[in-house]
Amino acid sequence: MNIYGVIYQDKGKVYYFNGKDLDIANDVTVIVDTNRGEQFGKVVSKLSPEKLPKMEEELKEIIRVATKKDYDQYLKNCKDASLALKKAEEFSKELNLDMRFVKSSFTFDRKQLILNFYADDRVDFRELAKKLAGVYRTRIELRQIGARDKATIVGGVGMCGRQLCCSSILEHMDSVSINMAKDQNLSLNPSKINGCCGRLMCCLAYEEEMYLECSKGMPLIGDKVKINGTLGEVISVDILQRKYKVLVNDEVKEINLKDEKVA
Image (cartoon, rainbow, N blue to C red):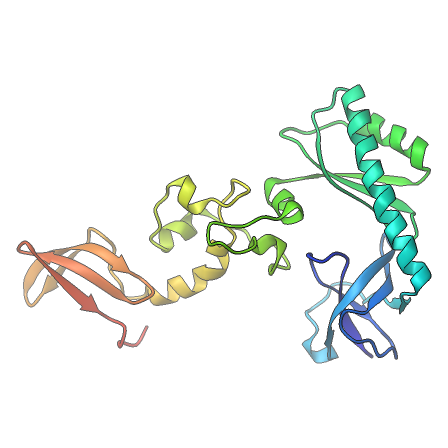
């Protein structure tokens, strides 16, 4: 069994499919079977069965390598989805619905039109779905997304100067808590720890494990410690370098734990 990782857009989550006896190179476009119908995607990796992430459901199959006709259909779907987004915005204004549409897409076989929107409160969009179904004669799915999902779709550049993690390298969203910022000895100023979406930065989650490991045996700022028998106060901590500074009798001393084994 050949297993391939496939994405539906240039940025987005990787989904795994059974390629049966197909031999497909990376960057080749394919038509795949999904729970929502057929989708047009691009192969980005090939895995051996033992390296496949644990899946709760049986793998769907790659139907075929995409043809020129398939690609033309995909481009038509993209164009029509863009027009559908404008139509949805038009209808939502007529119905006085407070919705900000972010993205729309047809499944490859056009059995479903999916529209993602952002709103501050819950929205009753049943009438909007009926109006859209009357125009496009297909199943309509309206998804209310959060600030993080919006940033994933729209993309952007973070304060680090790189493309947003959520729209580039992350395949799934980890939960992020304010305790992670505290563990990493960061200022709790929102402008320092919040990302473009206004929520806590995703990178706090995947750096947390390393900070917890390096902080073992390290004191906190304000702790009282003894240096050569004299009591002093910890005034700064560098967790990753495993160093901290202590104020002892108006003199600052640096303690380096980097060479000590972490318990």
